[in-house]
Length: 463
Image (spheres, rainbow, N blue to C red):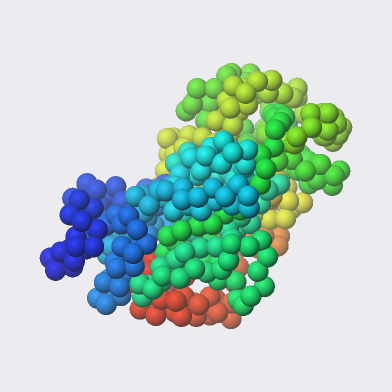
């Protein structure tokens, strides 16, 4: 990048917030997606919407690619600088601007860590329930970009269900608000929801207005071992059909738990050798008596299956240990081997068919899968591990298996991603989920917002 552009960027954000050191560029050129590395040419750290606007005006004038960069916890390569240019790191924009207790709303900047926000509103007796596994490090802005979900989406929904309004900077540099701070809005097209899940390809989010809910006072957490993983998948739909709505319902196959117990310090669960999978089930509410009645109903359902002794978490420490186990599965797999993580989602009744199909496809193409995820909303994370696979097969054969997994998912009325997004690594599979007409409409929206194609290029769609 030429010296004049660098000089103008320094004028906008100050000398201390423009970086060209190769080590820093590499740091901002990778996320948690496989072992991919695509560094930007320069990293710039703005502090205000106005600085973001000035950077975008400069980039628009000179046709410079700009990639918004959050906490770099993504799993689809959404912040990789495939076309090197400006890496727009938003970590300095990390203020909780206002907690509106009267209207149960909060206004934040995109660099706020999700768990920091949750803890801040909890002090007011309020709750932001969207609960991604990386909540301790991921940013709210990234959650908006990917329409993040997490464990409690089954009862409380995903990011889109809480976003009321957004301040965004368009590729031209213009700053707009997309909607209103109201619970209902039937005024024109819904630009707010168009931005949620757009993966930083349409505009850069600089302020976010979220709705909040009152915090629940009590919860029950239990870990249920199944001798047959297909029965564990089948139990998910059965639970809901009995009128029980857990606040979380997570699936972990045996390898997911075994690998994670080697990676993090958690109590020994003494799992029998022939246990194939677990369900981690949480119930929450404000009335302990009602919760116990729901737990009893849940037990009646679970007893219909071939299960071992259920572990009830009796203390907060035990609950935290079980959640730590679940939240660290992906990192544990990553410590063992390079892997590809797919983010399939189907109607939950179809989970057994999806799980069986994934295992069959893995056997067909010679790769091992470790499956876990938010079973309560039909969202199954599929980790395809590289250990034992040649580089050639990893490059040529495994993508064929992934395509078959996605084809199966769509056949089951599902889709390619529940919460990780399409980004860079899944874009070649979009033709499975969408027709030519649908893809043309989406690309036309991108063209309208970003006619020069400078904002997060090479994401979601193939060129």
